[in-house]
Length: 264
Length: 323
Image (cartoon, rainbow over all chains, first blue to last red; front, side, top):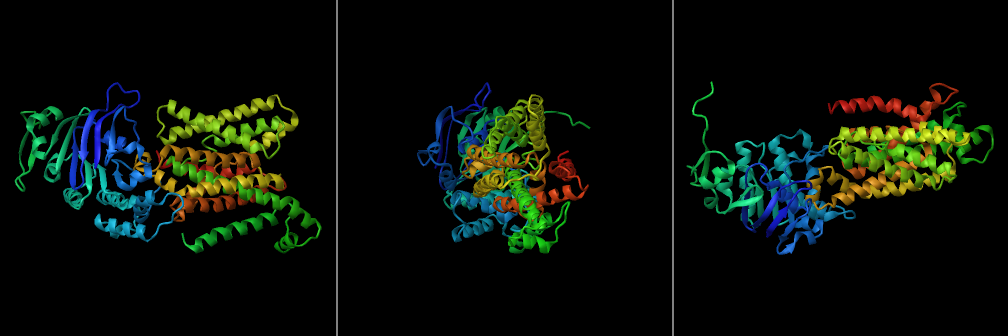
């Protein structure tokens, strides 16, 4: 559904491309995960998708229509994006914040109607934050805030969901909760595109993985295709082994120590 | 916000306005104020109310409403709790434009436009200075740039004054201190047009400002044309602020204080926040003008000085949150 075709992006005043000839696709009904070291271009992909960075070359297409030719509000009705960082200068209530997800459906003139309210309620229920409606967003824990942001994206009502590290700052339980929710959405027919640092969790949940390295695709395919020790060692510049997750048998990465002696 | 709170805001403005019409060097009882407003008598109090106090209070209402809305829109759009037209140098630039306009003999209908031109130059200059300093995103840097641009505007006014006729000097001084004492009805009508139409346009953009306050990337993800929206809000907020400067000179800190007061009352979304800031700003400027009249009678303190006395401590408290 979302396709990057030979996309090249360079930031102003930069000497190298942030993305050099990147092609990948996030399909409906699948969880596609983008992984890679810091600075490999993961967040740049998302900024390019929402039109905040011009493409030097290539195109980003939504169902074969160039994203650049789709009006921003029409794009937002189909693809919801949760960016990596977001801090509100002036706090809102959770219910008010989730309601902003309906912005692309309302614009200037329309008042929120029954459809908008039911979209807000069902997305808050899906993200498990229906109890938090009257809390201020600056009074939430890290885990609650991530789930509230997910609820806002779901309220947009599109078929595609793009998330930049949605489980940063989350403990194991909340992290699993988010991954299971995203997996469920993919199974329900959404196209889910996820940027994450958690290789092992991604390997368990993703249908398709893309490993970025210095702005280019270093490996892509099923988790078994991508989670190979030689590739990962080269990309992350750290010794590691790939083994099998004892619970479900998915490939799992274990980084090694480089110092032979413990520092006491 | 509940209907009762809205009624409270409107009620507070009405009470402040009545007080402002009745209090002054010659105090006029409320009963006589009513008589002067409704009747056709021409006793002394009637004349004072109709020709002096009423235009003065009306001008204060529109100046306060405009500055309150301008501040609320700038704070939300820049995601900066310290933003307001005076501190950003917008008002200073507008004052230069207005002083130059009046030095060239333009009438009150055109002064808001030269003030607007000055305000836009100041905004662009403040952003350029902040960007040159390399930290456009840091609220404090942009604010410092604004203060510097404001200081430059003051200097520019001084330069104009040094070569000006005495009459222009008086006008310019008046502009720099801020005053609603000499409002004329045509002048008030001009200001009202700018504040009402500009304010209505800002209220329509209120939902856009809500989305912008999430940050630029998140706003783009919600389908907002970020750059266009920022430009529109800045143009409208600068136009309104410039019109208040053309009408009443430099009145600082109203745009800073008012949105915080309205937020403290539980208003968060910008459509309501803008309307609430208009009402609260009007009340605040009317009361500040009353204070200026009663603190040291028979002398009158300049309005801009009174709002600064209220606003500076408030600014320091807000600044502390950043450090």
